[in-house]
Amino acid sequence: MKKSIIAVAGAAAVALTLAACGTPTDEPTSGESGSASEGTSETSEPAENADFKACMVSDQGGYDDQSFNQSGKEGMDMAADELGIETTEIESTSDADYGPNIDSLITDGCSYIIGVGFLLEPAISSAAEANPDIMFGLIDAAPAEEMDNVKPLLFNTAEAAFLAGYVAAGTSESGTVGTFGGLPIPSVQIFMDGFADGVEKYNEDMGASVRLLGWDKEAQTGSFTGDFENQANGTTTAQGFLDQGADVVMPVAGPVGLGAATAVQGGGGTLVWVDSDGFNSTDFGDIIVTSVMKEIGQAVFDSVSEAAAGDFSAEPYVGTLENGGVGIAPYHDFDATVPQELKDMVEDYTAQIVAGDLVIESVNAP
Image (cartoon, rainbow, N blue to C red; front, side):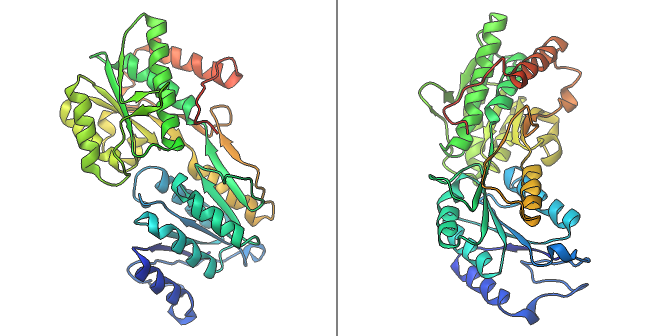
């Protein structure tokens, strides 16, 4: 297995990357160290996978976002370790990097290229149309029209977010909770839709009147920071919720959510994390009551495995509660304080959703 990670910041860096890829003598051999932006390692490579190379392009959040980019990379790491294939991951630092980064991976001989996030859809679709012999994957989005060489990896997170909204409403002491997104895109808004429904269902069941800040599901309008990088924006937005009485906040904004966590921790509230189990992936486990998880890493691993075995299919993968593609995390430090009745209700609604008896609707669902 040969593995590399490349951090690219702008066109000049892309050009340097392309130059390096074209110079075999520059590639580290077993036991050598790569440059500051590229690391490699070698193990024996199975003959059947010798010509297969899986690659990934992050969105602007980068692979250290403690959220969905990181989860995607973990899937690639698993593929490299368990399948013995060569992998490369490139980080994007702005929207302008997506196209050049994908082009560099094509030049580098990648067999299967996965774009992480809704924002990469135009660049992936364009590259797939121009390179019909290369396989592509796309997390959290699908091409406008079905393409034979693009596999969408999608997640119905409204189902899991419904459960998290129910928990948030049931654990709020102030009777006010909040949610906000990074950008107003379907893969963000679907979380907010489910969360809103969970709060509403709790109110219906308990005769309560928990108030939701930051999202109007019917109007599809709410609070957005405008990016996935500036943690200060997350701090400001979350603080605004706290000032209005919220004591549970769900940021759907990648690294921006870390800024929200800082505000919530300082304000004595609790947090619902998204994409990964924030208790494990962030330093804010002590305030995270639960997380809305997307099993992106497993979906990436499975799609890479299929492609490497010659079984690539453009049929979309949709993660649900039923197939384990989405879910909520354990309560961890809050296990003793979350009421048993609330836990039982969450388990009951999980079973109803899996059985198809309860459908969580969202205009943003895949």
